[in-house]
Length: 48
Image (cartoon, rainbow, N blue to C red; front, side, top):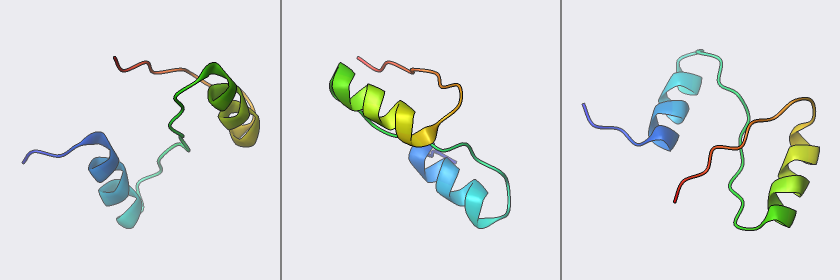
């Protein structure tokens, strides 16, 4: 089985497995806005 991360999250959620909220950001400002929407503590996962 070969799944992208977003596909795995959708599959897990469809079967009742808890998944954390996430967002995609291209700029520091977008990352800050996403963190504020999510609330609480957040982690940045940089993909280059």
